Amino acid sequence: MGEPGTKDRLSLEELEASRGIYTGRKHVLSILVENKPGVLTRVSGLFARRGFNIDTLAVGPTDDPTLSRITMTLDGAQHPIDQVTKQLHKLVNVIKIRDLEPSEMVARELAMFKIHADGVNRAEVMQIVEIFRAKVVDVTKRSVIAEVTGGRDKIEAFERMVRPFGMVEMARTGEIAIARGRAET
Image (cartoon, rainbow, N blue to C red; front, top):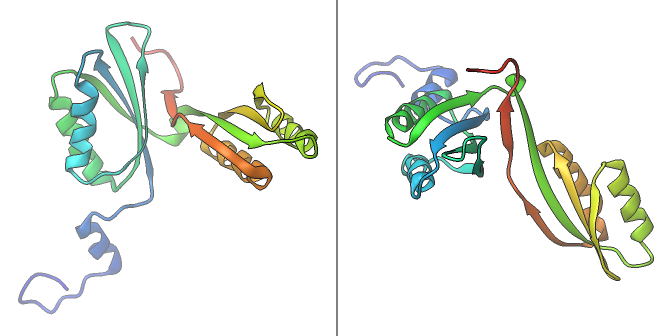
């Protein structure tokens, strides 16, 4: 339906655009902030208040100990992301924000998997670890802990391969990303 009192019909595209629905585009935000208490709470709270679900969140220091980098992945329509980034710029402790395009970044995630691996299936688990270029970081009589680094697809593929052996536990860091190309000054 169009404006009240008219009989104009909206196309599906116009209706979706008017609602600001989720596009499925993954946004990777790289946010450079001052390394001070409470900054992460203010940044993540801004997204929570606007109804965004943060898929992954990773925070760590930069080469400058007074600054930290927040890498946040979320799914959302382009327009609401723009509104939130404008609000982020207004926060005193936020230095720089970049919405990284997939073609303009290198992104990695770290995951550790504790896999049931007794004598019967240990060799097969070790073979899968080798295929994925993962590292075995701990071995006991009944389990193996493997460390996998790579993109989200690689981590999820590794999980699918080892799950049938018996997944005891899994921990993932969330994505971190950095822009490709020349150094900025």
